Length: 561
Image (cartoon, rainbow, N blue to C red):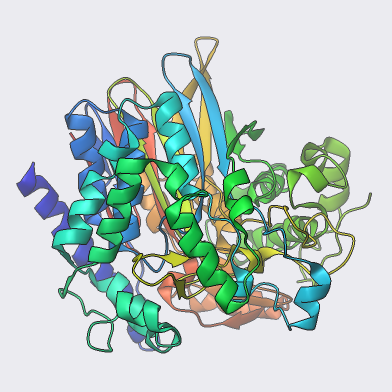
């Protein structure tokens, strides 16, 4: 097993170096592929995460008798140690779970709410920046830990104390930092130095750890051990919660102890659409999953395969569909308790036909108005599957790199800045207000299909990276379901990322001819680093066993037994 993981890690690092080299060589000669890995196959269980130690931890849990739910939580906790700029107990989480025994999907929204003192007029007066705010003003209640606990208590076999043990060991004893994580960490050095407790937690003698450096976070190990021994109430209103509130009070934050006590994750009903003989599932608001489904519905009548993969006409149609779907996010999506119309209405035949009719097939539009009556984020996505057929699609995030940048001294973890997801524009579902959930970019995905008259699990998948997630989901699904790429190939294939207006970024392997044709249609091409295009993981249920893929744009890997 160890040698298998070592070989997989070596392959992951080789693929990573290939991807990082793409930008440097693009000017001389465009590479023809981003591929560097094979799809992983295994007979019993599988884990795919963005960091090798998390994948190994998930597999160890399942080998020891835990199920896919236990493995997902253990992996998420490890990622909070090894990929701390992206995730941790100071953030939020969502998941879609296929329960093999019940033969059904369940889904959880474990996002926290705005503090009871988070009032729009106060934010306006203090210069709050929607979409980019960091610091104490941006902190909402972190919901991830409560979500982990609820998943385990409802559908797991392990306790939270057991699930946290691998993460506690890595935090206490240390681990070598991986290359892509190290590079991203280093880019945030100046930001980390703004807060003394944050610098003390994440910098080594004033600098970020380099690839291969041994990193230890004993404060986080102690915090997680307290949670393991005392339960999540110590965070949500107990001694740890009191420390969080005191620190935020001192820095001008809005979360109170009662806000932490009131936090509660909830089960939600996923949204779905039929596509190419499969059913694609996403979470409902407050996140952007409906945008991926809206894009698929807009695109379905077009003969995308005949256009050619990543051809100019193909990319143009996807980009324009993205503009329409994301315009509807801005207008109609926010806290589920405050929607102007049901999210399912965005997927109705009449609404989709009206939106599709706005696409100019030969000319880029600068902006799309929302239909009748956002986004930067740093995230981890992971997926697990066990021998019984349970599958978990799981996403956890602190929003921006290192979230709010606020660490309560001695706790070892950063608080997220998810409040930046609110808008200050009055009268919208996502307008900031006390006790409201902000708009979320986090979207785990799932695919089912009918076999012998019964709905069966087919694939758990996700793609981290803020505003690229919904458009990335669609590109990955089209690669696999329309163009027939195998799982790893569908992940590796070059992506676009539309930002705003005419501005679109393309990965380096997309040809100069395609670039010229898109520019002639009015698209403005911009350069972005590989990480801007997200990082995907996916697992497919085979008639016997599993197949899995992991994105070479990240440090992780898929591994099974």
